[in-house]
Image (cartoon, rainbow, N blue to C red):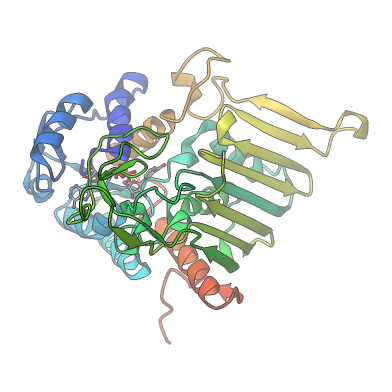
Length: 415
Ligand SMILES: NC(=O)c1ccc[n+]([C@@H]2O[C@H](COP(=O)([O-])OP(=O)(O)OC[C@H]3O[C@@H](n4cnc5c(N)ncnc54)[C@H](O)[C@@H]3O)[C@@H](O)[C@H]2O)c1
């Protein structure tokens, strides 16, 4: 694994757990974890359960006894690490968004296709697909329970940078993160809704905004928590790990922090057409005061509607328009039965699961695919398509919201 902070911890928990919950044809051994700071990665290896640590990710690639590389770093290093790992014949799990640019994502998808021919697997970490209620939504759509899909309404809302004094962490820098709320959380609802509906976004009209354009430089930060020099943590998250400070920056005099420009969007809102005929709206924001990690998706079809809310992730709301009129109404399905996706290995019905289980399910499917010689999803090609949607949103916003088609993932070859 490369990276040991937020996703590093979430993935480690899943790697530790997965073989104890699911009966799988292969067993994960947590061999080597990489971070740039020797002391901190040593602590992380001990805390998270890794056999050894290194400060250079190339050590993972060089070791013959390592089969899988799990990339949990910011987007600016995904392509380099993934390309090297695939070239060395390692199966790769890479966090989302796949890359910072379409050209990097194209290169990664092409490399994954070449590696696939040699039996090397790759997958992108859109974990929300593997919340049982979300997987079940997809099954309901595929089974025709919703009829023809007319509307998709997706929001992913956070508020961790409402305070203008929150520092300029890597997520607010285009060269590190690629984009802001759009690629970080917007990418999740793009993938989730395409996964559930089986339809792909074909075109968009978008607005994006950066509400706070300049922020103090951080002295130490992780992805969602940071400190400004001379101050304590500035948000309510608590420090995930206190690692990963923005290299080379610091306070000017220890009192008044230096500032830097925010180079990503704080919020992105867009309407979209899906290729199966549905109309969709998407909203991703880090300025939705009071909303901590509020992911909600509603789908309306000709025969019914279904609603998922991450804050109630064990449930689905379902409206069945085929029932007698007098009996119609939104009903709550508790997605904890053994027959529900992923649930048979957990607890008796009604004994709910949480956020971290989506990662255990991700590792379960990844291990099973690798061990049985199948291709896990979402593939790098699927993740490239999400990247192309992000790109269309950015281009549309830059062009005053003009309608912008999503580029095809595969370049067409002239006859
Ligand atoms: N699936 C999800 O729900 C989800 C949630 C959060 C983040 N993410 C994604 O996970 C990735 C990491 O995000 P995070 O929140 O864990 O960030 P983070 O800041 O908490 O952790 C990043 C880690 O990467 C390390 N790192 C950075 N560059 C490195 C390099 N060149 N070599 C070795 N280590 C390096 C840092 O030291 C740190 O340990 C991003 O792509 C992000 O979009 C996904």
